[in-house]
Every structure is written in C-alpha cells, then in structure tokens.
Image 1 (tube, rainbow, N blue to C red):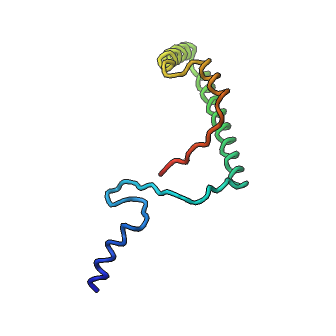
Image 2 (cartoon, rainbow, N blue to C red):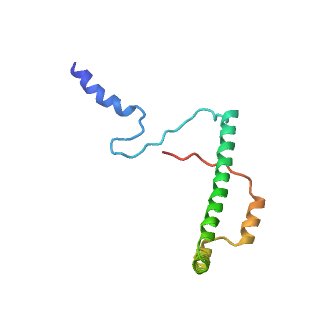
Image 3 (cartoon, one colour):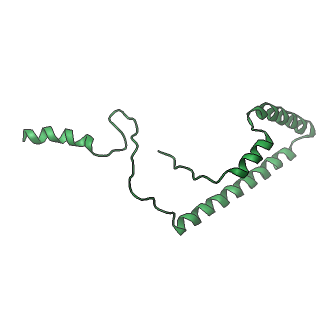
Length: 116
C-alpha cells in the first residue's frame, strides 16, 4: 500500500501534459511523418482567404462612406491628420524598390503553426 502511494506522484510528471507544475507551457515534439493537407482543409483555407478579402473590401468602403458624411472642413482635417500619420509611419516601411526586388527571388515559405 505504501509503495503504491510513493509511486503515483513519481509517475505523474512522466506523462506528457500541456502545462508544467509552475504554469509554463511545455512544447510537445512530434517524431511522426508530416501529414499533408486534405481537400476539405484546402477548401476551408480558400473560403477563409475569400472572406478576409471581402472583409477588407467592405471595411475600405465603410471608411470612405464615413469620410463622405463629414463636412468639408472636417474632411480637410481628416486628410491632414492622415498625411501626418503616413509621414511618421513611413520610417518603419521598407523602400518600394527593395520590397519589389526581394519578392522576385524568394520562394514561398510555409508558415509554422502558432503554439497555444
């Protein structure tokens, strides 16, 4: 009986768990073969991509609609504010030529799945 009580706590950490005792996430490693995406999964990704594109289009249309509702003075202020924001954020962008040239030589890389 006492031997069983001693072995149970020692066996518990040996099992794979998502979280360790201190709350840090453990990463599970897989050594099996890579599973290819199925037809349904590819179709699902296409639907998500299309939905995202439609969302962006509707968002831009809504921004334009809200801009047109404003008075001329407010529109002028909004334009000025947008110009200033673009000027300050331009520092963080890569030059146009560099972006174009770097895309031609690169192959598409698969994104790694996000860990939860």
